[in-house]
Image (cartoon, rainbow, N blue to C red):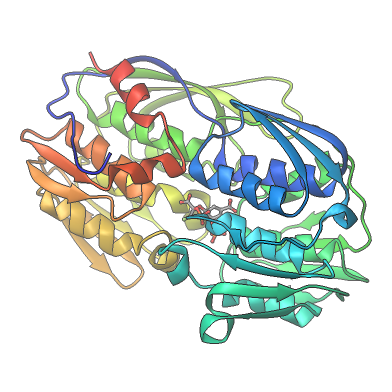
Length: 429
Ligand code: SPQ
């Protein structure tokens, strides 16, 4: 794809789209299916590059996985069914794959080497290496285990009580995967609630985990049984159309089957607080993950402050919310979001740099950004910097630009939303 010309000067967006499967849940469905006993089926699996990397790693660990478009069948033989891989495990661009896999492999009595792409090579791993080492795993990597390549020799683990320095579902999940293989109980304290898909899926696969406020505990020696996972649409993908519908004139979009787990719906709360014309129709009878249909219409918006416990509930939506804020009346302040600096790119710097190129009035701060709203956007040559969420945010920004906009590194979008441009084209009037 390389460099592409983006659609600008949109006169309206209308119609409905089926949001593709949730990335976090798709990864976890393959992981749980691989360590459970029996045949797990997954429908509406996300065919994004990241989730395909997870499938490829588990195949190298000896798991038989069939994939027919978005239907995946996994023949799990329990944790003991995983075998020492003869090749390195390549996680591509996926932080979720490497960090959760490290938790699983910490309890397996063999050697593994994990690598990823250039962006993964810059993302911090000590946050998982430290607790997993405390539990008994032998892990090393570049710069004392901070970066890939990472090598793990797993084995006997002991439960720990651990306080996470940052709210992170990846670190929590990694420790939970190790904890279910350890002797005794593992207790994790979070500073704020991060997404809880792992806890929900442990229960769905017949395991036990306790949530008590910001504390999660798991007992070792658990055996999981195969299940069926129907993956809900990804709210982090829906977010791009929620914002597009709000800022493009004459728009009304229906987004079908979106996952509405309360640990992920910060964007809904913030958009409503900013005045967005957003309505939700909840689906009934969902057993493990709540879902619903969202309708968004062109809206008059006001600036807001996004901070504290709200941040983990919308961490991946901050780039697109920054764009939304450029079109709101007044100023928006985003605080307590240091974590943005260690995502696929430093998302504070890339959002500020790329939106500034289009004429936005936006400043980086130590832990977030300040956005001065009511600014028209113009022409420019922008780049995703290899970050899928930056690429999609810029494609939505271009819709309200009154000039020409080109996007470099557009292919990064396939990490989480391969059919993004097809869906966008369907909605253009
Ligand atoms: O998998 P990856 O690359 O880390 O993906 C991102 C994303 O934007 O898609 C972050 F860059 O999402 C993370 C998210 O930020 C996915 C995730 C999960 O599935 O558990 C949790 C969050 O990360 P963290 O570090 O806060 O746990």
